[in-house]
Image (cartoon, rainbow, N blue to C red; front, top):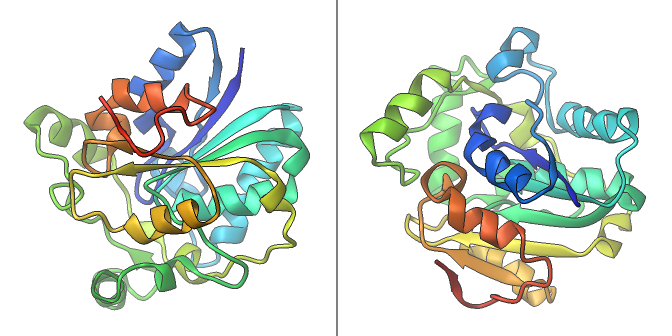
Length: 242
């Protein structure tokens, strides 16, 4: 039995993992899917000071309070930054980290600087306008590769603005995270914003798995994603996970 801790990306909450969490539990594993401070069911805690440091503390506190060991820590999209920071602070509690179409940041790097310039420009414009200078408004789900009406109807009313500081606050790393084994899972059926991070992972010698779906794999391809998460040796590296 493995304990999976699943971290959502921007605008979402822990609930987004429901389709994957059910499959992992059916396979005999424990699953925790916390919501990070300031979004979704924790949106009432949102303020301009909520950032990457806050979200890192959220997860470190969870690991410590539950005394979790040998965890598989999974981060989607933005939460790749959180995974890296948490692995750096609690390497002894994490057996493996998985970056799901996510940032693979280095010391001193902020998420906004790891996006393609065009995408980063859209973020900055949205923050300066409807984001009032400190929020990232929800992006179009269609841009992220969600096209099924039922999925759009399920996701859309649940998404909330995301704290801008989490994208501008840089990682502060000791290097301890490098001792935690890592896997990258890339979603290939959309604009592939995170391909440069898959390339970073390959250069670092990580297994890289590909899932043929859009960015929201936990919604649009939960079965294939579960298979990838249950493949700790990266046996399918370099191949699509059907």
